[in-house]
Amino acid sequence: METSRGVRNQVFATGVMNIINLSHGAALGWVSPYLPVLMSTEQPLLETGPVTVEQGSWIGSILCLGALFGAFLYGYLVEKIGIKRTLQALVVPHSGFWILTYLATSVHQLYLARFLAGVSGGGIIVVFPLFIADISDKKIRGILGSVLALTSNGGILLMYVIGDVLHYHTVALTMLVLPLIFTVLMCFVPDTPQTCLKMGNPRHAERCFMFYRGVRTTEEQTSTIRQEFDNMKKFIEHNTSQNSRVTLADFRSREAKLGMFIGVFLMFINQFCGIFAILTYAASIFEEVGSTLSPNTSAIIMGTIQIVGTLSSFVFVDLAGRKVLLLVSTAGTGMGLLLLGVFNWLTFHDTVWLTNYSWFPILSLSATVYLFSIGLCNIPFFVLPEILPPKICNAGNTLSMVSITIFSFISLKIFPVMVEAINLYGAMGLFAGISFLGVLVIACVVPETKGKNLITAQNV
Image (tube, rainbow, N blue to C red; front, side):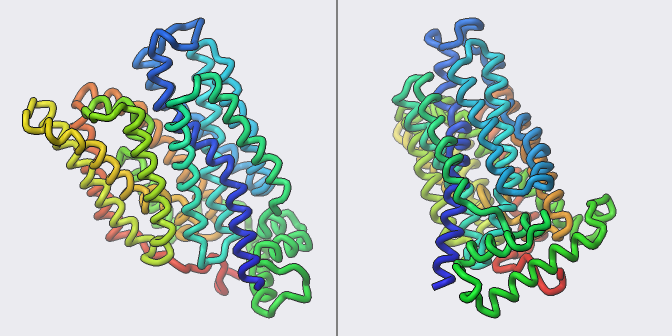
């Protein structure tokens, strides 16, 4: 009974936390339906007029610079005010994005709005994996970690759908409802017990621990539950009694170096496999590859497939394991992009017989997005706390998340330039090659962390 209540409470807390992530996913997907609007003669920016290609690339990519700032900011806040309060602070820049989007009359105001969206996104990718690692049972940690990708992808799909039917200003007002709901429900989510122990509040830590383990009273505590909390308490006390300040020396051990390399490399592959850029510029890409469906409809189909892939990862992540899914996902992503690149190359060279296969781009790209979603989309984020040494977990996680914001900025900024310079098929071929490189490194270097205890006897 306690176990089922504990799982229910962990799921509830994860669900509430991901409401803001759903809204952030919508902010990510916002560029696809509304960038063409901003570039048209009916655009809403009365001061600066229609957006140019160069300005459009900044609208798509400046979010990543905000995420870089947000990763540092929220990584610092986690140490100073704890995880729950840091999560609640995400509402400020995120709401600022939707408000500024509604009020913007110039492209420069949109730059600021997108930067604020990035700040909250940087906080999300830093804080969410730490929250999941702190509250979740090891048996469902992978599933709860996958919810991060599910809600983000769900937000992207939501924006693809409503962006096809709602006016530019209407959608900004509508999306403000989600951060409001998140703010209210977060009042019912306890902080993580580790945060309370670090803040010197063991009684509150025990109450939070009991909530996430489904124990209502101290009389219901089993010896196993009490031992788990005691181990956690000793673990935090041990780290506090040691030199708790993270120094460069802490990153020099083999375990730390390997963990940091894996973290940064997985973030590199996550971005330079090209899927994030494809999702951001989805409507424009489908117009380029010659899909017979409308660009927005094609994007909606692809977004739906992405949700299906993320749901599939729920089944496989704690069954097949992290490493196997990463290998299958990365290899499948590379193969799908290679096939799409070949098709686009043949189309570019006026191969007449391809007119009977105009359905291939949407099928190929949807399959690629599905394979990306079952592993490479989400595993790099929640596997980091399972790889990094405990003392540098927060710092290492922040540095890895900083790296992904840099990689995402580069990939989004250069993607339109790459397409113009080497055509879409050249960009797809390059992304495919990077994916195949990722397969080799994952096979040789990344360990399996399925079922790993994050607080073990040797840590306390």
